Image (cartoon, rainbow, N blue to C red; front, side, top):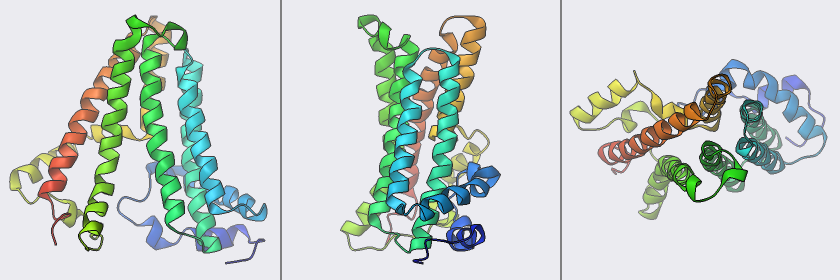
Length: 265
């Protein structure tokens, strides 16, 4: 589309097609709860202002970075603000795709910027949590290195967990293979024992904690508990628990991919 004066109904019709909304791994729960109701208003504004889809994606990255950076400031209000900004990031994330589909400009550059935004935001949240567990920027020093190191380990585990699926695509492309179909059958481990473990993991879905929204939800809750109880105990417990969970999730993700059909012909 080249029309810079669409209606809200036009944005919804073109920007939110059924095949996009129904993809197995495409939509965060925020999109279903309220995101796709709000995002057309942002998309409509962006189109009428003449913004490109990539420009909207850069805004999404900036919002996510802002949410991560405010986490280094001690106190529960800043943690809650970070959570609000991460929700806002997801709404803008929905809008950039809608603008791209309206303008017919979807392409590799937009996907690249989108991935850069999500990867960097979540890594920054992990690093900020390490600083927060140490007491904030003013407390950085030898006594804080343990907490900031844990934040770094969490960032590495989160990045590895996110990179695995991209590594599958890259590995297939480098061997002349097309991407595999995004279905549960293809993603399922071929070994019966691993398949059972993977099904059991659905009852304790800690792997869902590693999106920026869920991470900042945990951090905000811990900050409120710390405000009531005093100290940084809840924040530090949350950091340690997230490092363990993210490490297990990343390891399990690699094992499941290697045992699935994703790397088969």
